[in-house]
Image 1 (tube, helix red, strand yellow):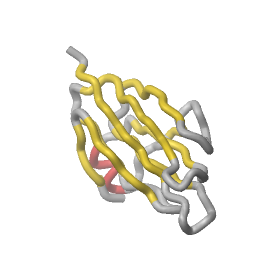
Image 2 (spheres, rainbow, N blue to C red):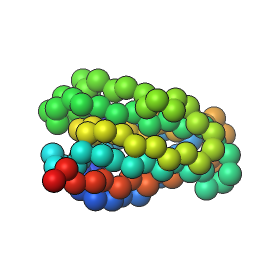
Image 3 (cartoon, rainbow, N blue to C red):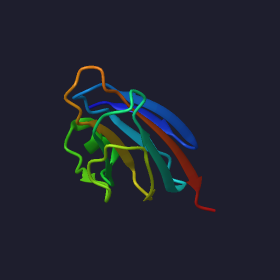
Image 4 (cartoon, helix red, strand yellow):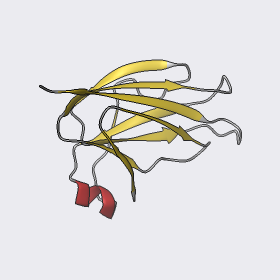
Length: 110
């Protein structure tokens, strides 16, 4: 698995039907991450997974991933993740034209 991006304050990502994004890592000084999941086509199913695994484990594909508490969702949902090292987006939709849009905002821990 590759690391898609390392972000500090914000990012916007789309994932096509049936795909899982690469890891999106966070800088060490980010303690709270706000995640908003929406479906531009109006339908779909997706979930967010977070990881506290180290960078090398994420790149090697041996990182441990945990589903966020909301599980699989089918409507616009917003929730917080506390101090993850990374997250990824799992688009569980089976229709070929159902993308998922995820907006991420990090909050500094000062």
